[in-house]
Amino acid sequence: MDWLKRRFIAFSVWMLAYFLAYIAVAIAIRYLSHSFRIVEIAAIRSAGSLILAGFFVFRSKPVLHQLAGMQFGYHVQRSLIHLIGSLALIWSLANLPLGFIATIEFSGPLFAALLGLVVAGLIPGAVACLGLSLIAVGSAYLLFSQGVSHDPRLLVPVGAVALLTITNLMLARLAESKSVVLIVFVMHAVQLPVYLCALFIGLDAGAAAQPRDVHVEDVLGASLAVGVLMLAGFVTQTALANASRYGSALQLCAADTLRVPFLTLIGYVVFKEMLSESIVLPGLLVVAGAIVTSLPQSRVQSQAS
Image (cartoon, rainbow, N blue to C red; front, top):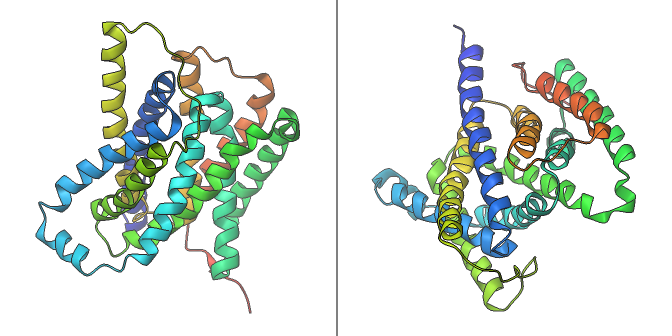
């Protein structure tokens, strides 16, 4: 087995772990949205990741040594961008159909390719360009068929994926030299105080849940959802960071788009959300484009001067 195949297998395994954890996060968020506000859910997820990452950080002397010599400016910038994107994504998962959210995340690879071209002058290879073209066609069809211009709420997940694409690219750079758990620990050490301050001053991204009778099964269900959110939230970030070590930034963002069928299936099976016929064709184009773009390929070329 050659070097490229080994890297692709490792990349695929980490992305599969990410997909499964992301599905668990989506289910937990949808369940908790009936009892908790958006910022409260974000704070719970952040607290879980901070606790778990801190456990591994403080048990490893090499990681503690990295922490002592770390330059925090770049980490803080990424953490704050990720915070805004996370709030937008959590709101979307709580309020919009999962099939639509997953499909509209088409823009991830497109943003990645655009940023690579503008910032580093990198031109995707022929295979990646074919995949990006399919994603672009599918995304344009999706926007046209859903009438996004008439419902501004549908732009929220687009903004979320744009911001989280930026943080994914920043993550790939950090993961080259820093421990994954250290990156997660620092990010949530920045984010959690912001969430707590937002709750303290009453700045929340959602309305309070309506009071209702509380039963034992409700408490148990909420407790289980909180536990799943804290654990799976940590796994999504560590798995994504590890995957970034084995694939290009464009492959990472393209593979991330493959959440489309996963979330669509969960929306139907768990929440009885029927997929709109107008989403099927653009969704298939997006998935096909994401698969093509995430295939093993040679490095992108620099733009000719």
